[in-house]
Length: 182
Ligand code: FES
Image 1 (cartoon, rainbow, N blue to C red):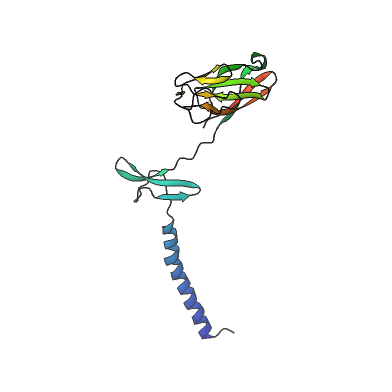
Image 2: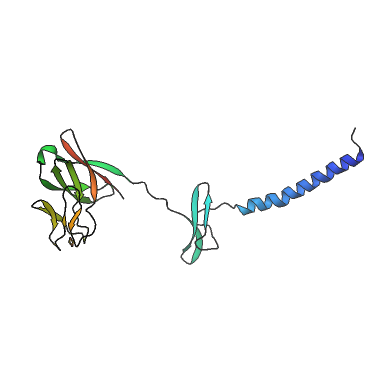
């Protein structure tokens, strides 16, 4: 049997719990307000993550508003058939234009050696002038840098970095170069 003391205690506990829910519950929802792009914010540069989307407080025309933080675009990787295998003899070099996934073209120097085919970006790593085959090396006419056509390594400067190398494959009678958008 339930005595008067117990029922009073139960009533008191229920009342306290209800008040606690009203106060704490209200604060809890206030702590995580919904954010939408364009809504006003208070502190420039502050970030909030809502349902996996990051918002940043930015200045837009004199007002601080939430903006979605742009995500990093995934790199596009494309293998492009650039030349017939028969067009590149052992020991020879050819320059081809490879369509880039995000538009434009990239000049690539192809060289066939006993080790296979090497694909290198045509632009010198000193100031971007195109390199060309001179004797056994790739040479930049502008300031005289020379590179190894099999690896892209610098033979002599002023260039300090090797030529950018791309993956080259040969299949079905064609040469393919793999380019990425970043
Ligand atoms: S741009 Fe090639 S050596 Fe200067």
